[in-house]
Each structure stands twice: as C-alpha cells, then as structure tokens.
Length: 417
Image 1 (cartoon, one colour):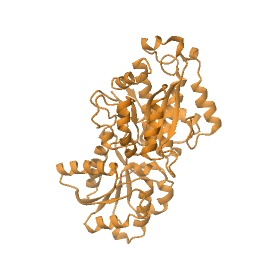
Image 2 (cartoon, rainbow, N blue to C red; image 1 turned 90 degrees about the horizontal axis):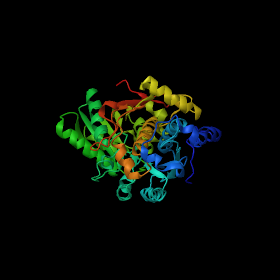
Image 3 (spheres, helix red, strand yellow; image 1 turned 135 degrees about the horizontal axis):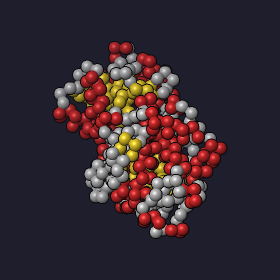
C-alpha cells in the first residue's frame, strides 16, 4: 500500500480532498486560534512553521473482511480534522496521516516500522488489531525510541514489556481487564462452569494467563477445560465439543471475526441443548463477523466485550465528534463499523496533539515524556485525568467495560445482560 493517505470505507474522495486535505493545508496565519505551544516551538521559527507533523498508522488494511485498521484510520482522521481546523500543533503546523499495511503479518509490520522510523516527520505510530504483530515490533520500538500508540491490540505484554523508558502507550482494552470482566459477566448470569476456547497465539496465551490469575482469586465461575485452535481453522466444532463434554455451561471465546463466524455457524447446526452461551473477546468486532454469521445469531446466545458504545456516549463529546464526522461522510453512529477502534483512535490523537504541544517540538523522546504529563483530556470514551503517568501507560479502566450484542441490522449495541 502506498504511503500517501488512504481512505476508510465511507469517506468519499471528494469529501476527503475538501475536508481533510483542506484542513491540513491551513496557512500559519490562520493557526492563531489553536492552543499556544511552549517556547521550544518558537525556536524553530520560520524554518518549520507550516511544515506537517506526521502521524503513522500501521494496520491490517489489506486483510480480507477486516474493518479494524479502517476504524483506527477513521478515528485519527476525524481528530486530525478538528485539530487542524483549530490551528494544528506547535503554533501552526498541520497534522498529516501516513498509512502502511502489514496485512496482519509480523514481518511486514517490522518492515513498515523501519520505514516509519526513517521518516523524520513521523512523531508516533498507531498500531492495528493484531497483538502478535505488535509484540514482534516491540524490540524495534524500544531501539528506535518511537512512541507507539496501541488503540486496539489487547495483549498485556504490549505495555508490560519491561522497557525503561517505555515507548508503548495504550488506549484500548487489555486482556487482564477483558477476561476477568467476561468471567464476572458469566457469574452474573448464574453460570458456574466455563470453558475457554483460545487462539494458539501470543494473544490467546495472554488471555489464558489473565484467566488463571482471576481463577486463583475467585471460586466461580470455574474453568473446567481449555481448548485451542489455530489461526484460520476451517472448523472449531471439535474444540467446542471438548468444552461441552467437560461440563462447561458457557464458552469464553478469544477469536477474530473469521473463526468466530465459523463457530457460530457450526453451533447453530447443533441441537438447541448443545448450544452454550458464548462470551467473546472483542476481536470479532474488527471484521465483517456479522456478514458471515448474522443470520445464525438468532439461534446462538452470543455477546462480546467492549470498552465503549456510541449509544452511551456523553452528549457534548458525541455531538462534537459527529459534527466533524458528518463532514467526512458519516451521518449516523450506526454507520461506524468497528466503533471501539474509531473512538479509541479519536481520543488518542487528541491526547497526542496535546503532548506534542507540551513537548514543544517534534522530538520523539520529548513527546514520549510529554504523553506522561498531559494533565487532562475530556474525550469521547471518558474523561482522562490524566490519560497516562510515568507509572501507568494504560488509559482505560474496568469502569469502561460493557457486554454488547449484534442487533438484527448488524449494529453493535449494549447488552441487556
């Protein structure tokens, strides 16, 4: 995929050129309404005034049926439109988005990161959905001292990586929040025995570790069996039957959209007494799961953990977001595919812009330090006070979590139970 900005689904070429590029080319004289930058920015003088500050996105854009990278791009671009309309950063420099496609392949992700590192205008990189890709990128992130912003990937090791200083920041779900919340959701439904159905990757192992920690401190629900499957398995019915035979009353699923759709189709063909409730991690919402499995969901009790719902958003931040989104062709919240990715990326971009101004320069190490010092951001997902600190690079808490379901039209909405 070329390095030039690409378009998410739903953003027309005409709207993109007039809205996004128009905002990016705001002249310095028009930048005065923006928040003033520290004195360090002034030292750069006319040499840098008006020069774009670049934000990289490395995601799975070319993966068939995936919508997660496009959701991240959408959130970044909506925030960039707002920031540039208010004068950009550092006293008049517009933000510019640069896209690279790793297609969920770690080797491509490493190559893309090397290319971003070599671009002097890139101050930070947003990651995509797949934790295994990000985990393979961590040594390079550490070596290059490039701020990495995780707005979807959930493996604990992405932030808990042992680096000092740590260049990874997450505004997203993490497995050690997701699995306990899903266990508690099962317990609230009176479920006493669960089975784990996990992908055989670092993401699956991260979730197993999170569940083991929860089980060590809680009696119920009890994990009666764990079954594994490989990425892009054509059938998940045998590992599912293993959990059923072990006495599980529900399945905690860690899967992406393709494998989850396969499981739901196979479960729907079983006798009703053999269809256990499925409580799923959120990878399924990063692709066209509903297109593949939607007509079977009437026969399967399927819910998914989320960190945010546009249907529960606070009024003022939502109105501000939608006013800008409409300029880019998004008329309703129902039109937003993979909504958590969009909301996370939107908030993270605004936080990053504040950190750039606080740093007073585009120096990557200074921006990393400033991300730990942004005092407040009143965002779409939550009010961050502060978003990050020197000892906490996770922006979300258990308070944001909810279980959700797919509506008959494929829209993800908060679950009643």
